[in-house]
Image (tube, rainbow, N blue to C red):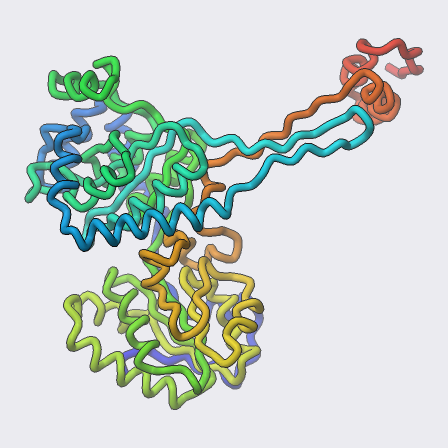
Amino acid sequence: MLLNRIDLRDSKLTAAELAAALPRADQDVAAALEAVAPTIADVRERGATALRDAAERFDHVRPVHLRVPAAALQQALEGLEPAVREALELSIAHNRAGHAAQLPTECDTEIIPGGHVLQRWIPVRRVGLYAPGGLAVYPSSVVMNAVAAQVAGVEQIALASPPQAQFDGLPHPTVLAACALLEITEVYAVGGAQAIAMFAYGVPAVDDVDRADSLAAGGDGRTLCEPVDVVAGPGNVYVAAAKRAVRGVVGIDAEAGPTEIAVLADSGANPEFIAADLLSQAEHDPNAGSVLITDSPRLADEVDAALARRLERTRHRERARIALAGRQSGIVLVRDLDQAVDVADAYAAEHLEIQTADAGAVARRIHNAGAIFVGPYSPVSLGDYLAGSNHVLPTGGTARFAAGLSVMAYLKPVQVIEYGADALGAMTTPLIALAQSENLPAHGEAARARLDITPLNTKS
């Protein structure tokens, strides 16, 4: 058997025991935090010089331009394959539609006559987006992160992606082309934890190239990259650790871990579909998790056999083989659909597919998942690119309390309070009573000072 099996059919586990029994990738962010701390400190202290040193060490190239020139963005767009450009444009359009539906509306509530609370949603001014460039290149992640920010109304969007030695120290051309399609002009050839530090603390220009690039982009010639308000985008464990390190200096979307898929399926599911979907996530990373939850031992056997066949024909077979054989992947056998739903909720998958009879009804029973894909014709890969949903999703079980990237990552709910004199007068007596109960008499005086009200007895 290719996949490990966990048989829960005769078990009666507590929620904690169930969560511990399920496959899960190891990701020690705390250890990585210790590893990235010197890099973050170095960027704060030495700025652009530290960025170039880190690129030389980790990316094996020393970029001349940390800020990508406008001409390079345009050249990348012109060199983009027409089919890829068409697909990216379709992805952008679908994601704009999907994210526009997420926008909350202002709501003015009259609490009492003359007393109003207005709920506003204000976008942050500036965000820094990260696009990975390790085992694979992800222009789709550029789309997912940037479209959500643009729909939210963010004014300034900066993006960083690792410099590539084969492209003269610039990010991958497909990433640059995606930026050009999205009209993102502030792009940096910076990767890893150093990119997160750059966004959090900002970086001054240190040489003539930096100063010229700043001026060419309409800057002051002194600042290469201004600090941002929110950092978003997927990355490896070191990027996740860097986000944890700067959280509080800036907002972050999440600490993303290795990708994962769970498929909840019954005996009527197509094993070839399931095998193809499990393999599609396994090709991402040797630490990727692929999990099947089923009450059908026959389906489990058929999926295992289909996976073995497909694995031999796939391009990234060695990477995928490690992922599928790892402790983070497996088949979980359950006694019935009710237990399958409990297992899916305990696993809290980044991506959860439902391939059962009446799949829509089963999907509505799920509480914990980053995104739910319903039925045999809604593969995770559709959500990765063109469904109109966002593919930046919570991993490692954090879907129990966290959500995928949306416009909300870039919006701040702000309440605007406006009371007239009569409305304040109606509230002043109970306000004073509460203020005195908390031994904060000046709070009451702040209301009384505005009104002609006889002072209440106060005790010292």
